[in-house]
Structure formats: C-alpha cells, structure tokens
Image (tube, rainbow, N blue to C red; front, side):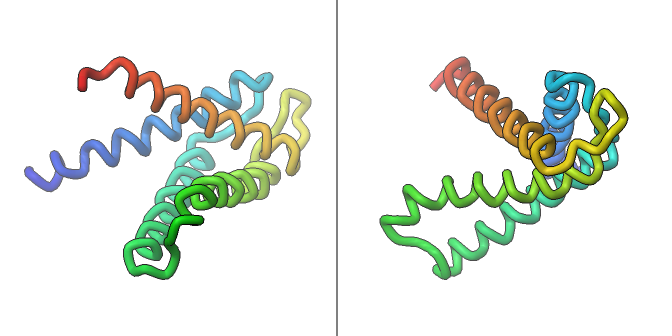
Length: 127
C-alpha cells in the first residue's frame, strides 16, 4: 500500500502532462492526438528526465555554465523530439499529418502550459 502512495504523485504528474498534450492539441485547432500517443510522449519525457538526472548526479554534466544552459538544452531536446514524434502521429483538422511545424507548435504549447501551471501552483500554494 505504501508503494502506491509513494508513486501516486508521479502518476498524477504523468496523467496531468498527458492531459496537457490533449488540451494543447485542442487549443491549436482541432489536432487529433490519441491518448496512446500522448502517453508514449509523456513516458519518453519521463525517461529523458530520468537519464538526464542520472547524468547530472553522476557528474557527467555540471558546472556553472550548466546552470544556465542546462534548462535551455533540455527545452531544445524536448522540442525537437516532440516535433519529430508528433509530426508523424498527429493529424490536423484537414486530416493531413501536421509534420514538423505542427509537432513543434504542439510541443511548444505543451511546454508553455506546463510552465504556466507550474508558476500558477507556485504562486498559489502557501510557503
């Protein structure tokens, strides 16, 4: 029982991110994203975060420059992966594949929604 309670915040965060993918697709003009593709994208983001965190913890990357460039590098990698992944798996309102530009817009909006939600939660939660 305690394992389920321990993993509950992680599962809720993954579910919230998959929901944000679906919301971003809806906001961008009726893009069609299946739940399967949203969950695979979120799982790949979690795997990327895990591997990157292990590399930082092991000391493979780090330093003063990393504090500034690390998050920017992460965003570029996520945007490139999302553009590639969603470009061939998401259909627009006309039924055509959205390709790289559409995947980039979708991934960018997902990241912006995540930032807005994070800063909103940070501002509203008590210290």
